Image (cartoon, rainbow, N blue to C red; front, side, top):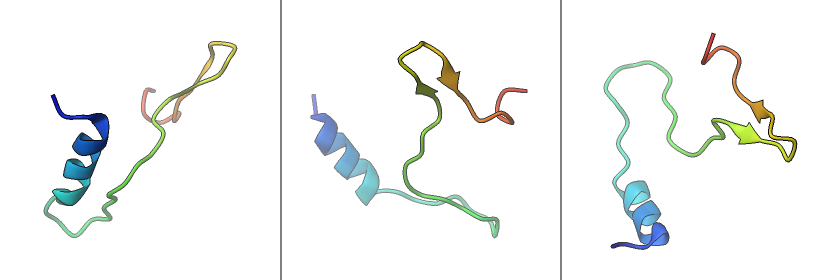
Length: 48
C-alpha cells in the first residue's frame, strides 16, 4: 500500500481540470470542520 504522502504527490502530479469555460479550482479546501464541542461548521448552501 502506498503511503499517504505518495498518494497525495501522485494526485497532485496527475491533476486534471474538467472541460468547460466555467471557473475551476484545483487544490485543497475544508469541507466540514469539527470543533472540540462536537459542533460542525458546514457551508450552508451545500446541504439545504
